[in-house]
Length: 98
Image (cartoon, rainbow, N blue to C red):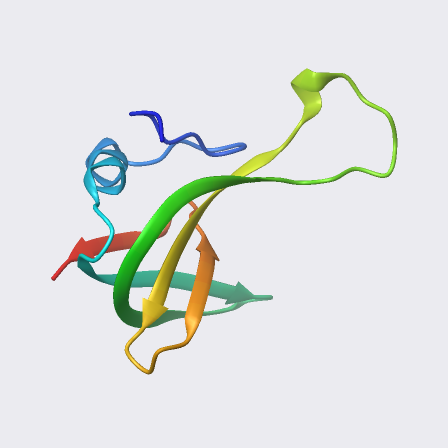
């Protein structure tokens, strides 16, 4: 993974970007994300074991130039119950080492 974490449209907090690129497989993490549906908003918390950080290249149904590609940083981890999970990182995501 490169030393820079890029979001498709917004900027990621530099401290979060540094933490994400410094994570090693097997480290315990907690992820807090803000969910918004309409005017309602709440936070979700999940703990687990970090696996990897990579990018998901989204597909488009039409031909476009490469500059239009949207890539989303994805955090892969194993939840405390053993379930493998992945979440998209956005500007409101907070990841902490435990």
